[in-house]
Image 1 (cartoon, rainbow, N blue to C red):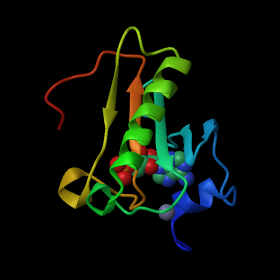
Image 2 (image 1 turned 90 degrees about the horizontal axis):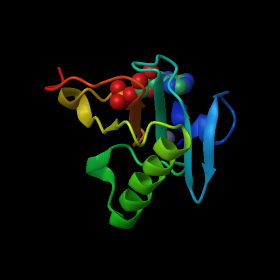
Image 3 (image 1 turned 90 degrees about the vertical axis):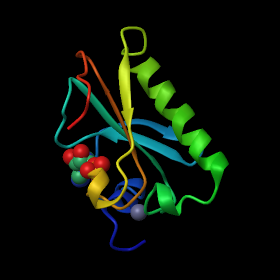
Image 4 (image 1 turned 180 degrees about the vertical axis):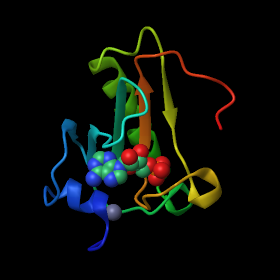
Length: 112
Ligand code: AMP
Ligand code: ZN
C-alpha cells in the first residue's frame, strides 16, 4: 500500500534498524522503545489489522517469527511480552499488522 509507513520500511524506502528478515516477515526496532528490547514484527505484504488478516497461517508465521526474535535478542528465557493492538480502542496507531516484542524488564499487569 503506497501510503503505509510499514510497507515503506519493508520495501527499504524508509530506514529502520532491521533485526531479522525473511519468509515474508520482517522485524525492526521500534522508533520509541517502551522497554530495553522493543521490536516490531510485520508481514512484508500489507494487512491493515488483525481484523483484516484472513490467512490464519500468516498469523502463525508472524507469531513464530516473534518467538525467534525473542530468542535471538536474548529475552526468551527471562521472559517477554508480545502485544498486538487492534483498532483505536486497542491502541493501534499504524494500520499495518504488527506484533510488539517487549523485553529486558519485568512487565506490569494489567496493561493500561
Ligand atoms: P501501534 O500503536 O500498536 O500501532 O504501534 C505502532 C508502533 O510503531 C509504535 O510503537 C511506534 O513507536 C512505532 N513506529 C512508528 N513509526 C515507526 C518507524 N518509522 N520506525 C519504527 N517504529 C515506528
Ligand atoms: Zn502496509
